[in-house]
Length: 81
Image (cartoon, rainbow, N blue to C red; front, side, top):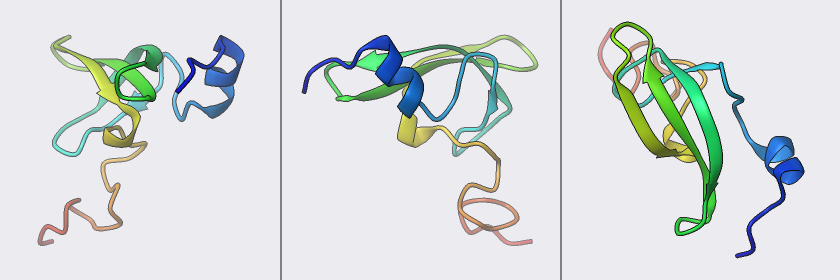
């Protein structure tokens, strides 16, 4: 797959730098960078944990969510209430 142009990435990227996001296990994270992962063929994000500044690098877009309830349940991942 060809590498998209920066303008194409801006149009299709779900999140922008500075957005607050969640992973399937924790959050909130702050998006610190976004770019094209050529080997995976998708958009990737660098994330920084809101509280202690731990960083996650190259998180694929399908592993990053806008809310902690990304699967439609109260606890996420089908957990009990």
